[in-house]
Length: 327
Image (cartoon, rainbow, N blue to C red; front, side):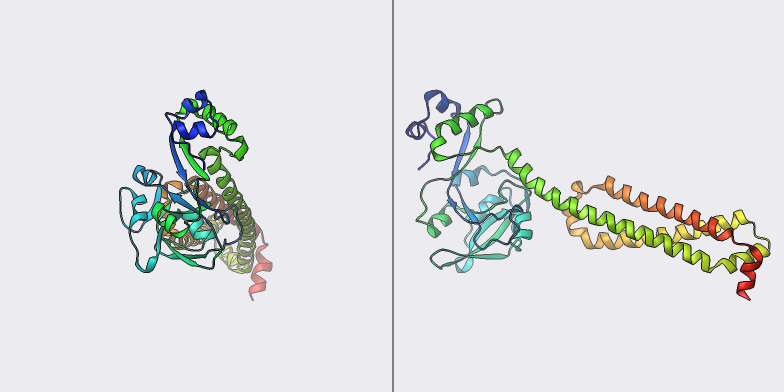
């Protein structure tokens, strides 16, 4: 099986001396892989048997990566993979988005898979990664993987951290030496961009639907405001008959409508904050405050324009016909 960590292993795989030297200063982690279905957002269906990765001990001790949450506060949540759990449950780590939206599970919850032999295995998510490169897999400790899947030998998944200046050279060296194995070296930046592209597509669709909803809501707001003003034309005619100036009535009407819109927006914003407060606290720095502010300001501007148009339309009604309609 493939072994890239030492010179002897690279020599057996066909690396030249020059190619082997390129990897000497690189951190290399070899992971065993249980083949299965993609558990990332690239898969539209809930996987019955997601891919499982064996995390080596040196990777666990290294730590790293950003975690969204963990069952127990720890400087290195990877070490939670080594804790024993009751009833043979296997501690596991997954990407937060994949666990929640694709696997329909969560932190501290159990997830079961059935092997080819018909054996049921129960994983428990002890920590969740935040937007990681492991969105397609479930990660478990080395000893757990060997116990569950002793028939899987060799390494099919590698993580490399070469010096920045040598990354392109290392990529070409590995793909050239291991071309017979069909290996493909992908940067973490590119891998994350692929996941992000799909998420952005979903968000764009929801944003378009939200835009249509906002458009319909704005049209409805304008219709309601104009109708409300027209139904009160007799009231405004009477006030004009009592000596109220048209300019003052217009100002009063616009202020009244804007106050209603502002109160409605405050109630709506508070209700939305209550609904999303868990996600807001977890990703406060990722909230698109500029877009939200632009949306609210746009609603205010549209409401102001509609109220002014409605006020002008209502106050242009002739005085006598409006008064007679109220008699």
